[in-house]
Image 1: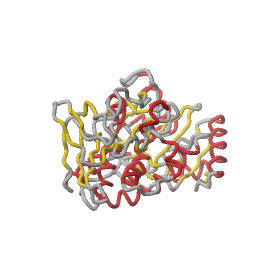
Image 2 (image 1 turned 90 degrees about the vertical axis):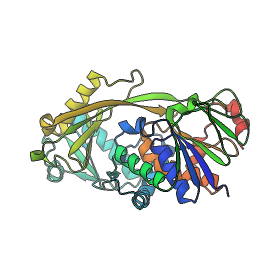
Image 3 (image 1 turned 30 degrees about the vertical axis):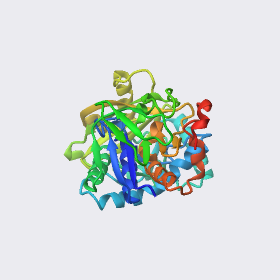
Image 4 (image 1 turned 180 degrees about the vertical axis):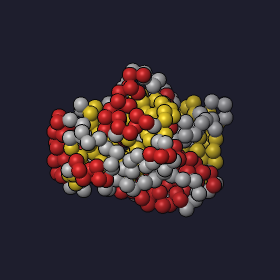
Length: 381
């Protein structure tokens, strides 16, 4: 068994992957110029495969459900190696609609969830407001999903980094310029000019940056990644109003999605915008999110604004991740789109299983990193 692994990328995917390699007895090297500085900083952190349901994406749904099942054990094991908080909460999710059309949308969603055997409960408006009194009395429909969990991505990433470093991982704060063109990969060239010998497994988990690294047995990089931007903001709930909400509230307002996530520090995270045209927070998008959030939970109008940020998530043409082996010792793990936090547990486990030549989830077959560049099929071992 190879007993060393190099992971390129220090976001939630890379850090989770480092942790699982250590759990399997590997010595780990993490390469990232500035860990926890990418999309992980701008994520909601909802572990909610049914709330994230997308019609006609059964394979993606299967990946999300499998990863969600892995998370409680992953959180438990991470806590053995760090005292830092993870923001993990098991309070569940309320899905709410603002008007009659939104109620119809939720009704269709409910039928799909029931078809998928999801544990979802329809609520009356009175029942929903008994659970979350801050909800507007004007909402039109509500569903409860008790199986949904959440974590705070910033906190969890810091806890992961602390855990992997405390267990002896080497952190190289540099960026990878190229991966040599041999199979197996033998050398990584860093921006500083340093060359790192890759004696065993290399996992490329650098998010959007994975598409910019040449090598891989050819000068051309076969990954078809695009940035998908999402605005997210944080507001602080005054102490006299805490807790404003205790569960995640995901809603539709005139068919626009919005989510409200309560945090342990008394803040709320608000998000759900998605676009591909601008890397900066957009005033109109922030306005729309606040307006829709206040429509569902009016008390948000009395909270204190903390920050608005925008993150770039790596999307693929079919919204499925790139996850798989492309050489005898090179594994690709990127392209997780809006689901990077949720899919991190499965991504990490799969990378280790591929290295150990264990059986992986059937849905992983749909994640072939070379599927959008068939001319590179020869690279597959």
